[in-house]
Length: 109
Image 1 (cartoon, rainbow, N blue to C red):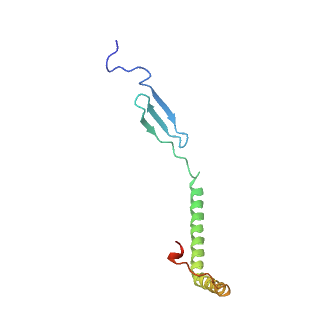
Image 2 (image 1 turned 180 degrees about the horizontal axis):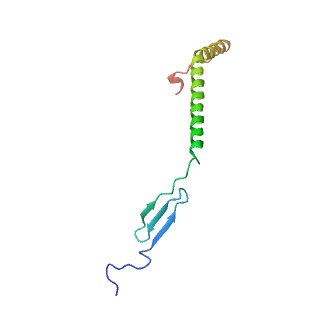
Image 3 (image 1 turned 180 degrees about the vertical axis):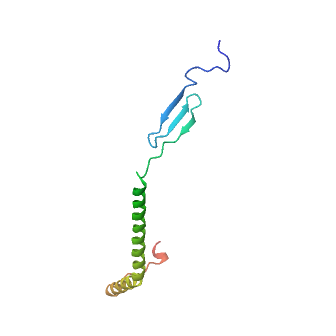
């Protein structure tokens, strides 16, 4: 006769699962359907050696500097570009005047 605290073999079974996304090891208890243990996946090396990491950092810094220079130039020319766009929009507005009457609230009823 089984005691009150004894469990069957199926109830005490623990599953080892590997996460297909990150590769972490997970232990799940079948009886409680909960995660008992979690072991994170080992981190992958981003670079093979320090020279490659240094090169990548230098390239990243050069890209930052290039983007910064481009944004400074864009800010310098911003006033001229906006003025030209305004002049063009004003010219088009003069060439094609708006003849339609504006809608009034009681026109919508």
